[in-house]
Length: 202
Image (cartoon, rainbow, N blue to C red; front, side, top):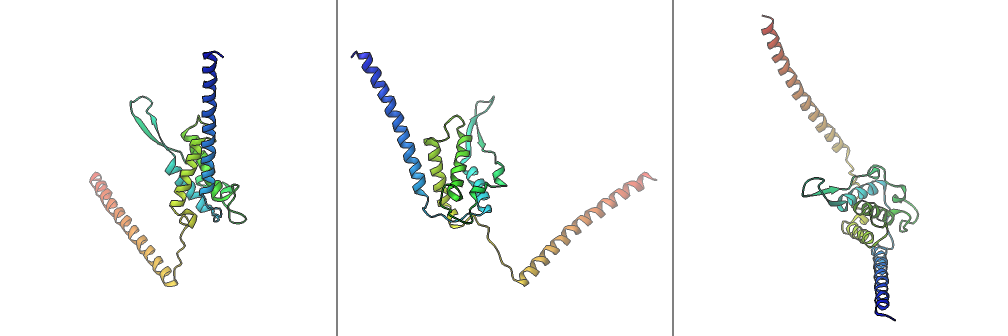
């Protein structure tokens, strides 16, 4: 076997090993994603899914791009999509098993990581090491913020009858002050315009 053939063979082997190494690391990163989230996940409401989508895209959907004609970099934010107003149905899970990849928290994080990855790196594969790393970062962020413990849920404040009454009184008092200011402004302008008109009619 000639030196050229040996060199070509070694180059092919290096290429194969590099490809296998990338695939192995990517698979390992996806395994980390699956094992980092708890095996038993809580239910997720529509409001939680809506807020989680907005916060995740705001946190991770940022990148720098070159200015079209100036020698500088621009910070860009990922545009908020329709899911900020109407989350995907598969993200909301109020019954059944919330721990599968088909719905609930796991599905939401998985989907949003793909959306952000596609916006950050439009030329890369949908399933790659970078996407898996992004998904893992999102999982850790969700856990650190305590979203799985209900911190995204809207807090319900129960008021007593007397507190409700006082709230209405304050609201009405604020409205009165608001319209009194507007009335004062109206009277000032009326006086001003009448004075001008009186001068012109002389």
